[in-house]
Structure formats: structure tokens, C-alpha cells
Length: 108
Image 1 (cartoon, rainbow, N blue to C red):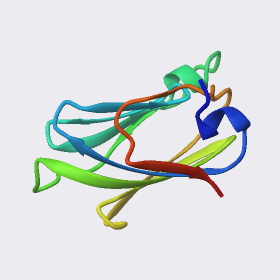
Image 2: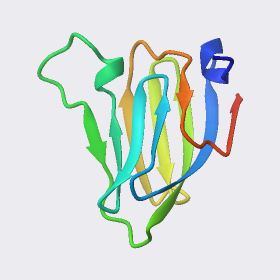
Image 3: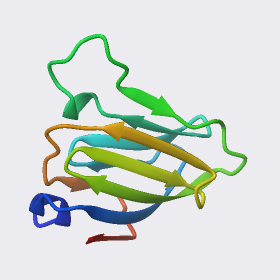
Image 4: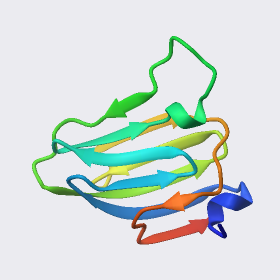
């Protein structure tokens, strides 16, 4: 995979999600379910017990959302609908894999 994630440098990406769609950013999964943006870091925080690996936004009034995503080798921050809500996670072991419909992604 030749995605900018594979370079291990900070990355900024933009995406839109509709109900049922998901993104996979190096093992960090972002999806929209039941009108909420959900993030799951369980695949990039392996071996640790007793931690919360998921987060989700409050219910969004629309059936879609716009995401501005910042990925550092050890941090993912997701700004939902121009920063109305923010999800932030510490991560370890991100891979270079990028799956899902990302509008733009580039190193910063």
C-alpha cells in the first residue's frame, strides 16, 4: 500500500461518511452507525487490558457527516462536521493500510 500512512509521518485526511460506511486508517476504524460516528482503536492498542478502545459522538441530525482527520504515529483526532464534535485517541502500531472512501489525504 502506497498511502501516506505508510510513511509514518503526520497525515491529514478528509472524508464523508453515511450510515453504515467505514474507514480503516492503519487499523484504526471509523464508522457511522445509528447516526453516530464511532471510532475503534482495539486493533492498534493490542495487548492492553482494562482500557476503553471505542468512542462515539452524540447522535447527528443528518444521515451523513464530514470528517477532518489528523493522524500522527501515536494519535488520531477526528473533527466531525467542522469541529462540532471531536474524537481523540492515543494509538500504537498503525499500519500503512488505508481502506474506505477518503476524499483527500496528505502528509503535513
